[in-house]
Length: 354
Image 1 (cartoon, rainbow, N blue to C red):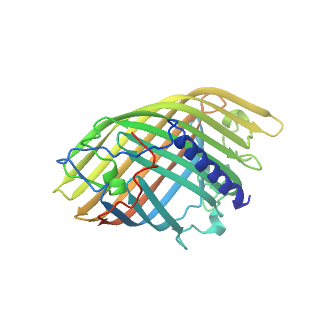
Image 2: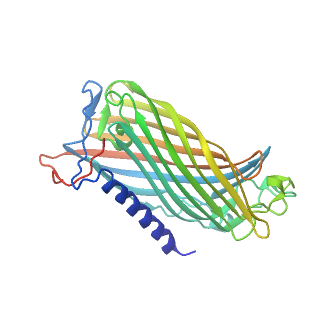
Image 3: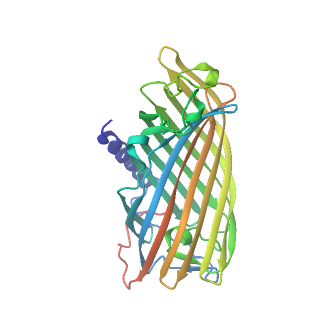
């Protein structure tokens, strides 16, 4: 598989999102408006500051198939990224670069090629999380599922390709006292401890494909997934979710933020195997969204860490079987806020987000 198809998919996704945003209300002029928040709870650096940051991040993804007590888990050979980013008003841009020597031994675990797009937008009353992940090259993470395995026996699967596209939108009820921007984008500072209930929904899609069976030929459980030797597994579903987030502020400068939301919905899944055709079924879907952060603010300086995770568990094509996708990001950040006198953007022609 060449890199070009992955880039084409990213371009198509970006154009689709831009088209939806540009035609959302049928107006030629749209404007982003930032919420007015309680000054006693939130220090706002949104309008008059340019935030510049350096970061180190690890994006991750893995998938598993479960049938009773048997689990089949595949993981890519992940690596770390280092980069720089900026925040100005509604614009957030991060440029990351692969850090050499952070991959696991490629001779042992294989090589992974990836295009990993993650966008997390916190606009006034809403949280928007988007994942667009395209990976090629995995290894079997739990080789003990096979008969007569050796602990050092790692099964590489360079033929496995995955696609994961997920979009969540959630409403923040106490948005004027509780900031999601503060721990993740540094254009606000939470001055007092506060929290908020959140609620929303999402759409989730995952697709796994391999040149040969995803199920090892010598698996211990011969009845795993009804004995099917499928090489394609796909799922799409809709769900609603609710949760709560809270930031503890310690001595005005330290903070710890934690948010969790859980949801449920309905989805359709299918598997396909050579010579067997397609087997599909409707069933329940469950998701768990976690965000955690900790950091230190000293005037215009910031240092901290954050962790984002989205776990989706969905029915599979056979009774009492499940497929799961786990993805997210861990990031270490240092940032500086630079004050400016004039706006860096024109006053018209930008997008409105309420």
